[in-house]
Image (tube, rainbow, N blue to C red; front, side):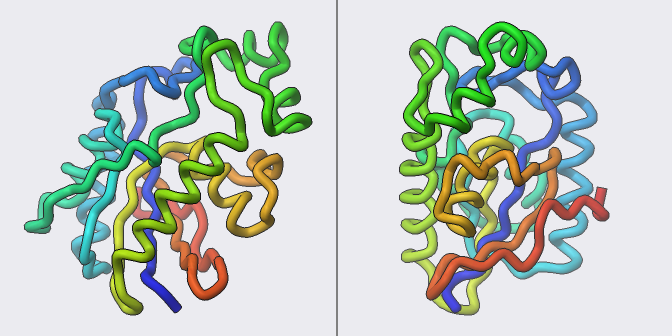
Length: 200
């Protein structure tokens, strides 16, 4: 097998509490989100030897990475491809409005090329997330463990692509705040741990 990727979704932000979509919106962690990240760090310190850290450049992921790896002397590598799915003019709308007025999930799932105004499609996110994760995998050897800090929808889309070769299957996967999942990409994609939250 290739490198072992530990996928970490960022800690809670206010939009997670209020049920609003923050994709490209650069939101800070809540107090609870910071607590989740610290607990994740204690768990990782006790159970893992991490060789590298990659993160979405958005602050909720960068802060999560910082708090979760305070025990490590490792630089964090930001990657644009790990960012959350952006929905353009519909950013910050409640999920209820996105469903009732725009049928966002239904339209995206039925047509992977559908974009919200000024936003991204499932296929676009699948392409950049897949490229980013394959690039990370190619930079590390078998036996190495790499922490990848990203976002809920972006991780769901990537998982659907790697495991089912179908971005429209993204609704089959859900990643809770500061959940941990374990993914191997090469030689064949396999997920050995999924959305684990017992450490919280």
